[in-house]
Image (cartoon, rainbow, N blue to C red; front, side, top):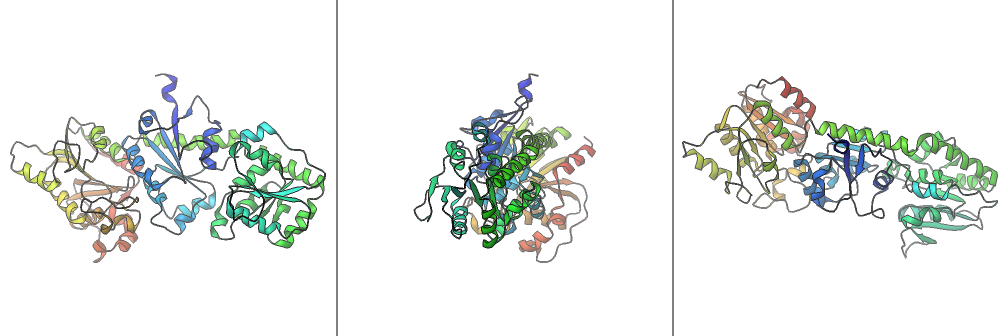
Length: 529
C-alpha cells in the first residue's frame, strides 16, 4: 500500500474560496496546518470529486440545498462532520425548519467551539460531540506583517465584524470624549452612521493595524452570550490592545490572559478603561500579555492537533458503520446473504453499492428491474412459484404509515429463515419531519427540509404487537430499523402513541429500541453465521 493511500482527504463546505468560507473553515482549510503526510484538503467542483475523498467538513453556513449531496455521501460511505461552531441557539430554540437539524442527522459527528455548547447540544442529539477550539483567522497575514509598534498617543479606535457588532460598538464609542478617529471594518452599508473601511480578506490585517485600540461587543442577549472568542483572538494575535464588553467567551479569554482589566460592563467602565489606555506603556504591556497568551494556547500546531484527532476518529468509526449502505453490507457479509431486495430505489446509488450477488430493485420511477409499486411487485411474485425469497430486504418506499405496514407485512412473507429487514427513516428528528401534509402524492417533500414520513408509526406498531420478532433501530441516517424473526419484550403502547408525535418523542428510545452504531457492531459480533 502506497503512503498516499493512508492520507485522509477532506473537502470543506461551504466552498467557493477564502472570501466566502466561514472563519473556522477558512482557518482549518487554508492554513494547511494539518500534517501533510496524514491529511490533504481537496478542492471541490462537483460530486465526482468525492470518489477519492475520505471526509467532508460541513460548516454552519451550509444551505439546505446541500442535503441531497450529504445523503449521497452517506451512500458512498464518506464521513461527514457538521460544525455548529457557536450557533447553538438554533437548537436551544428548536427551530424545526433549520437545516442544521438535518445536517446533524446525516453527520457522523458534530463539532462545537465551547464546553457550554456541548452541554446544550447533548440534550438534542446522541451524535458524538467534539470541541474544536477557534483558530486564529488571518494568521498568515498576522505572521507576514508582524507586531505593530505602540504609538505614543491613541489616534484611532474602532471595531470590526458584522454590521450588528459594528453598530453596537459605534453606539458605545459615541460616549467617549476624545479626538481619536473611529474606524469600523465591515461590509459597506449606507445606513451605518460611522466611517466604514470595507472588509477585504487580503487587506484585513493591514486595515486592523490602523487601530491603536479596538472595542469588541456581542449582542446583549442569549445569542450573544453563546458567541465565540474568534474576533478577540485575532486582535490579541495582531497585537492590538482590546477592550471587550462582558460576554462569557470574551471574559474567559481575557481572564486567562491576565487582562481582566479590559472587561467592561457599562459605559462608565468603558470611559475609565479607555482613559487608562491613553498611556502608551499600559498599551505595550497589554500587547505583550496578549501575544504571550496566544503563543501559549493558540499556536497552529495546538489547534490543528485537536481537529486532526476528530478527523481520525470519524474516519475510523465510519469504517465500522454509520449509513444504510454500510449497515446493509455489514449484515450481508456477516450472514453470507445472496439475495437482496430494495423497495424505493430512486437513483440507484444505494442499490449499486450493495455487495450481494442477486439484487432486485422496486420503484415506479426508479432505475431498477421492477419499475412498479411495491404492492404490484409483491402481487406479481406471489403468482410466480419460481420466484425465490430474499435474505435481506431494504424498505425505503412510500413513507406513509399505511403503506409501510403493508410493505413490512409482505417483506416478512418473502423473507428467508435467518433473513433481515431494514427500514429507513424510523427516527424523525422533529415533528415537521414526519408531517404527511408536507409531501405530494408521490411522497416528495415540497420544501428543502428532509422528510421521514410516518415510518416510525409502522415500526412502533410491530414493536408493540409482534413478540415473535427481534426489532431495534440504529440511531444513524434518520433511523435504520432492523427486523428479524426471533423474540422481543413488547413495547407497552400508550393508547394515543400511534397517532401522537409528542408522545412518541417522549418514549422514543423505548419505542424504537434505539441503539448507537457501536452497539450494532457489538450485536453483529455476537450473531452466529
